[in-house]
Picture (cartoon, rainbow, N blue to C red):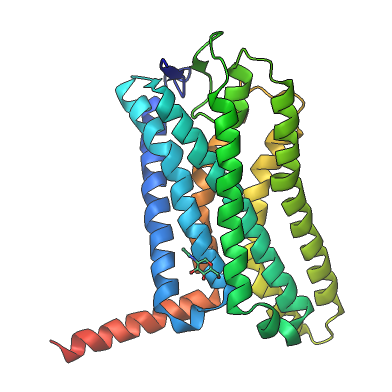
Length: 308
Ligand SMILES: *[C@@H]1O[C@H](CO)[C@@H](O)[C@H](O)[C@H]1NC(C)=O
């Protein structure tokens, strides 16, 4: 098995330094932000609710997501050595596909959680109990892991004798399929099926949840309750829009090539920027998290007073 070559940003000579610095900053911020939000959630009992447990899942997935692609991209951009081994490429494909699918499934579970919270508020604690949430999150992880394993195995047996140059910045399914010289018709059918199950179905469920949520909220008489109900969904809704937005823009286009410079930056947005934003979306405008941080700061303060 010989190496592949990731072209990455080699076409954009002038922007390379800026891009490397930008990616490095985004990568560090994603890791730190997601770790901090997970730590806050596990430390603060007030945040031990389904929504925040799922958010914790999302943070862990986002860390895997960026770690599967950005460090390699960074080393390629800095050293200008754009080789990646077959094993490296296949593991990148596995972890990237896994975390992208898991991201989608966790976001969908969160939409379900918000649906129950707003549309069935009285049964909320009954429906979203520990066991149900545990099962849902276990399903997200298992389905994504098995799905990614299947797709990766299918990809690893392809022939790549036509070309080994990846004109993108990571080994993902779309690029690898396009690169292969094998007959890929049956694979394409498989990928389409998978796109429907891991892409279209979760997306439709999310949209359907929000249609229900919004129509329920609009029926609430008191404007204060209405605002409160709506604001318990804004963080999740923002994350959903940020996540699906670039994906939709990229997939709406007829051509499947990542040749265009704009497409390239939209993809980068999707791979590097979106995972970084989640912790901010959930902490900056979210009263629960801000209160929790204040309380934590208070108890740290007390702690240091007592022992100094
Ligand atoms: C994921 O979510 C489940 C269910 O809410 C929770 O029990 C579990 O601790 C979470 N795991 C992580 C790693 O955040």
